[in-house]
Image 1 (cartoon, helix red, strand yellow):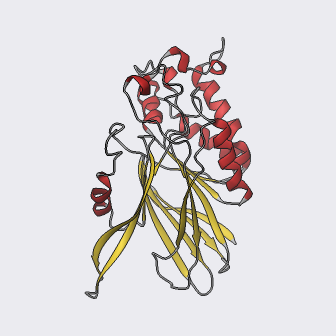
Image 2 (cartoon, rainbow, N blue to C red; image 1 turned 60 degrees about the vertical axis):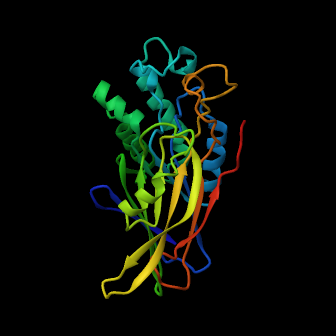
Image 3 (tube, rainbow, N blue to C red; image 1 turned 30 degrees about the vertical axis):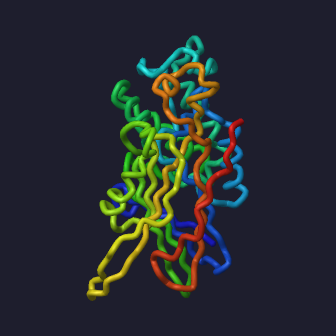
Length: 295
């Protein structure tokens, strides 16, 4: 099968697989809040999950906060022990070192990375330094590896379509990096119904920012077709998790001082497959939690 990529309109990105056989799967990884340059980033686990998608010739979607970069603007959450020493060198700027490291880390996966979007950490760099570090990283990856990684926004749409001569099916994914705090009691689950009604065209909603990792498989909605047929559909809600351990041993750090909940490390594997029914909502096959790993 062949992959076609297009920006349909501002912040709506299409990934279309053509010539799909009925038995073929499209494997993807939905993740966010990697904080790659943080000393707490579990890069070994991230690499393991990226390798799984690479081996499956699948797609990687990074929905915000690929970077941490708090050491560049004096964020009040930052403590000196949180800065990875490799990004402190005489004669080199912090941001240049982080960008160089990130490009080199992602280079083996450039053929598989579909989209990288903004989180609050990248937006803060834009604000304080007037420097769009994420755009620079995506531009370098595309240029050096002859690929077409899409640059998303803070919020937007991903259309994943699978088609052959007999069928054409699509999954509409709305992503938003997220907002608010850690929500220690509800974990943000109170937002599911609100978000489901706000984006009635979405089959999957993906949210990040809180570092929580959970999945609601079946929030139902009442719908009506243009010809007056009343029916129900369901939206799947993914809270995308994180690859940074902010708790550690529980000794110190921002997450410890704020008594945030510990979180599982990782994102979500999402598989897609053409089904017999040529329905726009039948393409999703399974959403699988990445293995719970702590080391």
